Amino acid sequence: MLELRHLSKQWDHRPLLANVNLSVASGETVALLGASGSGKSTLLKIVAGLEAPEAGSVWFDGVDITTLPPEQRGFALMFQDFALFPHLNVQDNVAFGLVEQGAGRTQARINAREMLQRFGLGDHARARVWTLSGGEQQRVALARALITRPRALLLDEPFSALDAALREQLRTEFRDRIRAAGMTAILVTHDEQEARAMAQHGWGLVNGQLRRLW
Ligand SMILES: Nc1ncnc2c1ncn2[C@@H]1O[C@H](COP(=O)(O)OP(=O)(O)O)[C@@H](O)[C@H]1O
Ligand SMILES: [Mg+2]
Image 1 (cartoon, protein in one colour):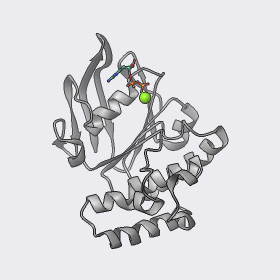
Image 2: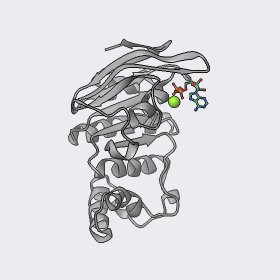
Image 3: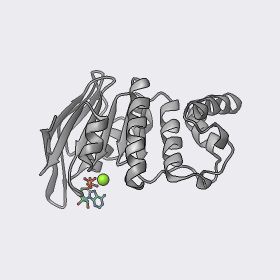
């Protein structure tokens, strides 16, 4: 269970988060909706450990992780711009996290290829990432995030760089893969249809307050 307790954060004297509480049960996807500039990414960065809250705490499975550095939280992040490594081929992008975790390079590559196969990207294992389409690159990014078996997946507008038809296709595919992995996830988006298709619960962030939408 991922828990945000009484989180507060200001920007330029404006409250972005004002005493925010949120619980995400294990294996559940929760969506966070809100207008541009409402503080959605700020909330996600606090969960990731990339920003510190002014007040409040972040908990995972009953442990206060508010001051834990990002790399020790065991969370995977996925942002709208694909953020794949342009100098690595597809399989080495996916293998990267495993090597970071201490796996040998050969074993990491084998696991990465297996994952790419499951994602329908087996033929692209040795391709440069920039030769793939936008949708394929986002699939690679998800494969790279899931292969390390993170404790939670944090998605910040993962499809906003893609066209509408592809967004619709990827939202069900991603939902199914995230559920199949039993992953706990927070999805930040400004697209309510996308959020409803992917998340068991949705919250709206307005004036620093979270309101339950479903
Ligand atoms: N480090 C920062 N630099 C510049 N602006 C920031 C920073 N952190 C927060 N902000 C401001 O805080 C507000 C909320 O940002 P953000 O959390 O990115 O909103 P959202 O993701 O909902 O669009 C924006 O107005 C943004 O300009
Ligand atoms: Mg944002």
